[in-house]
Length: 276
Length: 358
Ligand SMILES: Nc1ncnc2c1ncn2[C@@H]1O[C@H](COP(=O)(O)OP(=O)(O)O)[C@@H](O)[C@H]1O
Ligand SMILES: [Mg+2]
Image (cartoon, rainbow over all chains, first blue to last red; front, top):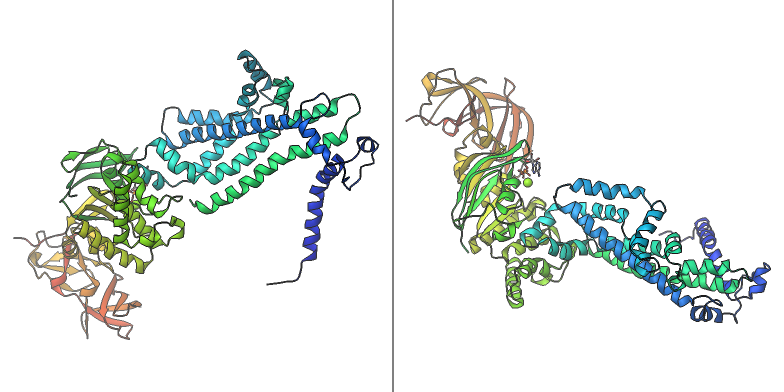
């Protein structure tokens, strides 16, 4: 073993980390400081040790006249969770169908799913809005989440995962008497658990960061997501309470980070326990 | 559980490609029949038809007196051991074996009893809690067998179960499979491309060549009286020497293209003198002589310990191999003779064995 420290590598890495951490640290430090000082551009890099109450304050009460942050976090969390779980459930099932079953128009189904890749949410946002309005789902949790659930990307990803499963495994299960549903539940899902975990992380963050669709479909403040909430705080014409905005931003970072950390363990466990 | 198996006119095509050209076969209860053939000849396809994983294009599969050709794999009461084991990677050894029984809704006590019984038989008791990836190749192989055994099926199917193991383990597992099959008395179809495996395991062999069954007989019969040139070359190692010749002396001898006239020890062959023949002689039957006979230019010497294989060329360019007990002579050219009693005579045009007349 070479025990000499490789200084160049360390310096480069430390600089890289600093580059990514600095803005977050600025926001964190800023949250504890006086809003007037921030407005004047006097943002200190050191947090004010007496200012930590701001986190509890925004969490419980929010900015004057707006929804409390805990509520917006809950809406965002519910939305991201519903989108991630929904996308995974639908994609698993559709990938299962197009990979393991021979039915008429199978390839047509597959290509139909495939070409929707070319239609991101933004492109189809007006027709989607019209459909939701037709169903009376504007300003509802359903309207907020359902249109974001269908996912060609995840379907294609699971199809690749399923294609890599050896035919003999499928056949062994058939000889053991497993029907399609049992095979899906007992073999396919556990064997793909690591991929499900990885995709869950990605999709959760995707759902958490949604902005345009929630902005359009949920005008009721009770359905404000945290992302919308932060934008609204900045948009008020009176003096912007920068410390509160920054505190909210820090809080908004926490759930995605928690999901990443939590699933990371799971994900590594899935990788080491199942080998295909 | 004892059951007989009968295949009648079994055919399989994938689109325009004909893979199996009509297999007729009958297995007695408790019999182990080995299907042997080169890779790609349709062995796996045949097993998969019997298992119900593929649908036959034509023909009947009768298991224990019942036509099962239209039943689901699970309803056929057949267990299969796959080449790559196909163990469920996320389940413990116990669960791998128990899965099929759970689906069949056996009681927990019965499942435990059967799995432990099989585990004891296979020496897997200490490994029941492990995952497949924590096992060696040989152990995985045993688990795959255990999964078949616990089902107490009417029929075992083995698709080249030993081909992923190293040579030494293969020999051990071969003996073990034979012992288990005898002990359990389950009718079995065993597929392999390895002729040693085929000879040692089978009560009978079916040699398959490009989807056509060419010989069905006991291993010794196949070895001693191969039905055609293909079987002659396929069974036995090193492979039988096949030399071009013509019928001569009123059907009582073969005139080898390489020179000598070899009389038939066992009688006349039908046909006109001058008819093209292929004469087969196993390497162990070629005799070394001090002088005379055929001169063989030695190209390659393969010492195998207790015996030695010489591969060389006859004066007319034909390859010939010889298996000798003991070490090889040091000369570069040796003299060999073809002793008449061990000759196999084939019609060169049809490839079929020519038996003595009358
Ligand atoms: N599902 C399939 N579709 C098309 N051809 C197949 C299929 N399965 C097997 N074959 C063909 O059938 C032939 C026999 O295959 P297989 O039974 O696997 O041979 P073996 O097990 O004797 O090596 C091969 O030429 C193979 O390409
Ligand atoms: Mg095969």
